[in-house]
Length: 105
Image (cartoon, rainbow, N blue to C red; front, side, top):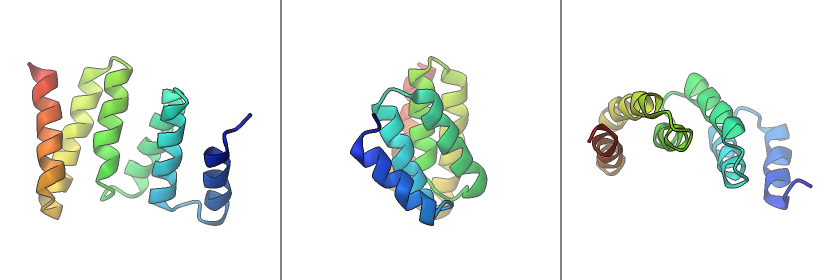
């Protein structure tokens, strides 16, 4: 059975299928369900269509770390660093840099 939050998000996306926030929230719900493949698929789609949606890069890196794919995680963290710098978002920039540092140790 589909959990209620997942169904609500799917219903909302039926009306706003390109909404990055709703898609991101849906991916997080799939991640909670341990459906990492689906979560990655959704967030990669967000990155392709809305490359300025900064949260996607950190979350995608985290998902790839959970999949034991550190090189892909670093790739997305680095892409996020560029966007964070452009947006002057120092909090996210520092989180991304720390994630890269931890993987490169």
